[in-house]
Image 1 (spheres, rainbow, N blue to C red):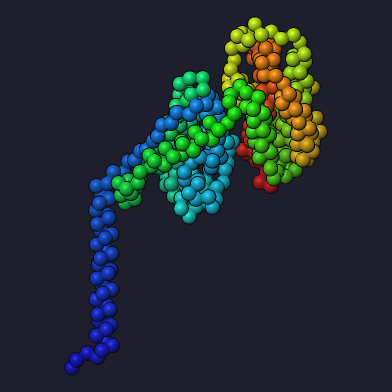
Image 2 (image 1 turned 45 degrees about the horizontal axis):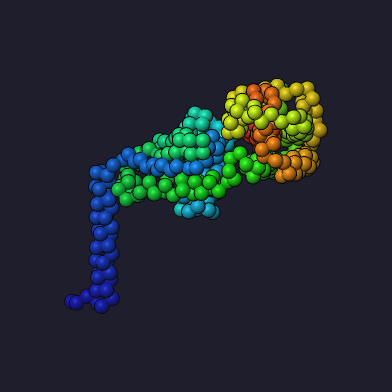
Length: 366
């Protein structure tokens, strides 16, 4: 007896499904077999010469958050969520991300050789074994820096098959090109525009660090001998006026252009030394915080008022005259330009201190 037409169609359909399933199984088996021969280890890197001082390059790349401005992976998945923890710019700084295109992962800064190298552990999709990411900075001249950015890691089976097809070198190269464009677009080092821009950067960095903090977070002290964020902010505001008054007083003295060569500390070294938080100093009694601020907005308003005066002063100042005024400073001889640069770098130093408070154990979550 012949099978009915519907039954024949069902048999044909089942055969087609069976062939499809066998085809899928064969493809999976092929992938698994190929993955046995694919390399598990991978590496990629890129080099770029950036026409900026080495210290400036280093000071930019040490902050994980700045990767949002140049790294290809951040730009390809702008809607990915990113959570930062630890003190950005220091060992232990961490970023965790979760994106549709970039998946889940985590990067942790594990080692910093000041001015030379930054090493991080990179975890992909919950992996226990991290890849190693390394920045290496090499000074080729006063305003010429060679930067290498690379990664070395191991991909678990069978995902290691992708090592045959993924070319990460071009991603690192594109990222460094983006970084080069960002840094080389900045004002020339030693110019008034550079000085003004550094004040702008430090203001924005401070505001970003303070954004959204509650009263409890502002008043939290990691220990009895350490300042709260509110106290750090008060110190910054008080210091700005004192440092500015001191800088103006030095500029009222006779210029000494013949002594310009006696100043051996570069602008970049001044910034690097002042923002090195491994060295601690006790503030003079006049600049010890006394509880002047309970609200961030009030403190920032006072800071901006002082900075408006500083910026106006810089705008009308003669660059040659600034460089011709030599004075004694805690770090040795400095010129009038550096005395003004010191003000902004001092703010940067204590912004890092604020970040340390935020990263301290017991810091309130809200």
